[in-house]
Length: 445
Ligand SMILES: *[C@@H]1O[C@H](CO)[C@@H](O)[C@H](O)[C@H]1NC(C)=O
Ligand SMILES: *[C@@H]1O[C@H](CO)[C@@H](O)[C@H](O)[C@H]1NC(C)=O
Ligand SMILES: *[C@@H]1O[C@H](CO)[C@@H](O)[C@H](O)[C@H]1NC(C)=O
Image 1 (spheres, rainbow, N blue to C red):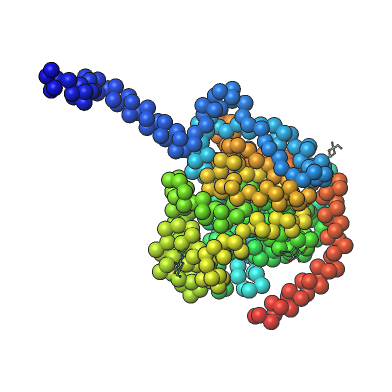
Image 2: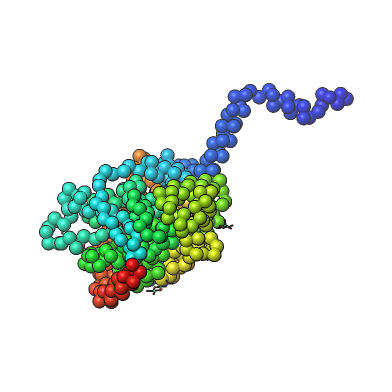
């Protein structure tokens, strides 16, 4: 036999050369589409086969939860379904395009500069119900300004009052009859650092001072707070640290990272996570650069400049400034998850299971079930602080959820009244407490 003509490899090669180039192109296009579809975790096929019905919302809470029975059970959106905008049916697209797609409402805040006890400056940006409502909901003249509830917004990592999603919720809530104030992190919102201290992932005492100040300034006003992303971590950490002393009627946590140590491990995993790690690390560096002198005095500026991740950035800034032995020790300290059991005000939380920035592995399910003050809602899709809905993608589902939940909580006879009465009883204690704080301030000045 002629060995040359029967070499199977040659035959295969010959066969392959007979296939037209255009077929190869088609195959490579198909493979690329499958690759990108998986990389960006698209779920459009799942949505199509589900008849665009969306996914139901899972609610987690302990048995006998008054917050569920009184408030959450009356929220129709939380008992409905969430369907992502079809052309944004990927948690990555939702997250990356968040600020590009959400339309930014046009309005002006009124700024107030708040001085913290250590001489730091926090920019408080106010938007009142009367600034945006054509007709105020206080039309009947019987109610006073003190009856209008005040919502304190705590933005996410390097976000401020002008981040489109913050403007969107501020505007929507003001339209719905609320007064709103954005409590910026120190050094953000265009103000200088006026003391030897910068904000970090676990810096919750600033928020505590802002809340106590607002409560003292308008003791009759029902106060609520909402944090997004890292702002949610800071808010829940504060709620856990101050426990029963927190003068809020209610709080909301959106896309909370919960546990920064687990989050840190998660960031080293996939291609997309490494991408977010780099992008967020760079935005932290950018924000720090505005206050380079203070960072250089308190931490390692050379290290910060070389940082290529959130972990590096924190290792060279927050860890050194806070005197933590290791970066993991800082991450453990800064996480709100360890304080969830101590939260004493009604707290509603929302996380998407496919959130590509804050992993669902970090959600403290057991602690949440154990604390009767907390209800957690999770959806399969939604990305990070996004939850786009509708064909145009102009609406953020989470903002509608928050509006419905907070208005139901606000009129809930037992929960909101209970909280307000508690403050009145403790008013004298608060005064004593404020006294000792101001005495301490004088000492340190
Ligand atoms: C104002 O009064 C009208 C009718 O008198 C009533 O329907 C409406 O609910 C009242 N609004 C408020 C905010 O009390
Ligand atoms: C829990 O809250 C109380 C106040 O209610 C506070 O004194 C205590 O320090 C908090 N616990 C932790 C671990 O922060
Ligand atoms: C953190 O920074 C120190 C130097 O300040 C360095 O020795 C250490 O290896 C860094 N740790 C990590 C985990 O990068």
